[in-house]
Image (cartoon, rainbow, N blue to C red; front, top):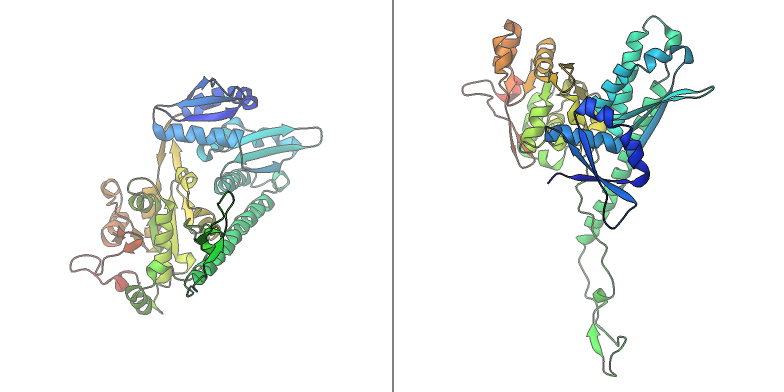
Length: 400
């Protein structure tokens, strides 16, 4: 049975107005069902040919009806046509699953971006800013001040990370207290309501409700120190070998890493583990690049991407629109081309056979000589050493 969304009665007519957009961009047809008991809401079923497209349509509906984050961009009234171009706005809404509204008042002209994910909102506005900057490259008067909006979103990222950091500190304090030796609690004799004249013995623990420990997996993305999984002799030994050497850039196939760690279901945490490992080897942010198709950015359940995007580690791949329903992603091409340009290594289990057939010598050489495979064992990212049978040791492979 397909999943249903629950929407408020007031949102029903708003959603009706977006049916044509959903049909055009996602080929999604909506079916509505009125509950038998609660008449204040509706059930909506999104029907698409593919489950992935259906999930994208549902994510857009949530951004439209229940946005968690909203940002507005003012634009000059005399340049309304390029800023409100239907093709551009529809592309952004379909690609990033955000909702964009045009507000025209007497002295105010705005584009309002709405999304249920802060990361995606940032990327959509940044894409819009770059598109407009390229369009008005020679006309500085027509530029919009989108950078201040992006800076405020970055501040929101940092404030959220500070909250996580504070929670981490509280969790560490709780763990420290839990390791202290426990003292013997004396038994009390007390009568309880409704009891007979005789008494029963109870302990203080029965009166004190223990604080529920937060077991949710939290990590502070701002931390630069080595994570626990990389705190071992092998990693320390590799860091020592690489110290002082001229390191090759590492180009990470984000989609391949995320799907491998998530066992076919994409997980952003796998990308963080890969970045953490190379940082444990002594790599700076500038030598770590993660290439990822844009639609994976909305699947960040672990809230990994805001920090990595801000540090310019994660970059989205370019893509080509084939028709209204299909796109061709060029993440593989970008990954290998970047490895050629930077003389870097490629972290992926993909052998890029299609690129081997229709590329030049430089690309084929990069794939054959600088491709680094890996395995995930739990949260440990394991790299071969030497990198192949009779091949170079890992420290030499990562050095120029």
